[in-house]
Length: 436
Ligand SMILES: [Fe+2]
Image (cartoon, rainbow, N blue to C red; front, side, top):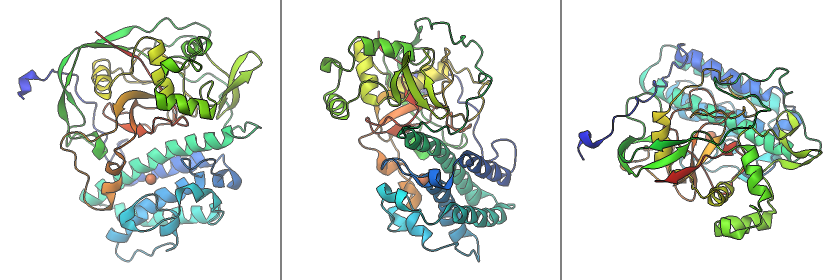
């Protein structure tokens, strides 16, 4: 296929390099590690030990597992004389790496009262000291592996928040992780006052043709599943300028959206019936409509926020009700490049989505109708780290964008998040598309 057939698109955003914020690799290391500890700081030892479902892990486990990653893939093979902190940790904090050895069952992470949070803190300090020795003046493979480990830890920062939200959300007393800010969070330019109803979303036109998709090799850090970059053929279509709002989703609910099997995929309908779904996760009837559990505690639903904590099945049912469909991940990426607007007002990693505004940059992941499969030419890396992404490429759907809880630097337009279609505990919403 000739390059002349490939549409000229806006350039890929600047690379996310090892020195993300202009600091050294060790500066990046310190920053990310400190951010994880700051996220765990509001949590007691009991909070950090609880596991509310098999898919969610205790906060303490996230803190230790990310540390195990550096110990296993950097310190043991690359730092001469490194003293392993505790050999037993290789069993309890290995997540899914078959090549590294057997591991504690994922659904039982919540029974690990030991090691306690003091021991986990000591583990982190031990590994941090060794990592900073290793990173002193390093480059090449070591620096690349360290950056990989830091991006991995940032993914777990988001999981730490979504997992503790799920645990707290199961509690009848609605614990507050962190109080709501006294002042409204900064919003992007063009945002609307909370009381103003959102106008219907304008539809962007996505031109058909052959488009380059994916992260080009050598353009800065990306996970392996974002490449190889390759051409993809698209038909003309429309895609909404913003995700669906809470107010719009309530219309779907009022119109019997959860009671009409004709709107649902069979698997989704069966699950919705057996699980008793009548609203997005965390929603409950309130004094004046619907309330939702947030990391700020129980709050009234805001009409101008994106609907969030819905499964792929609910997103697909809504799209059917609206007479539209979900975008493919390729359509999403092309539209995002055409309309990339940045988000200078983004306040950093936050526990709750901001109100909607038109644009690519939003505070919820967006379900697409694309299954998680490898791009043409994709090959997992040899060795244990080849297990990072490739072996999960079945029975999951792609989500694009980022959420309020996604670390800065992960909002690449090529980023491919993935979850099973029933998952609801992530900050996941969706926007609509339409054929032309
Ligand atoms: Fe992990």
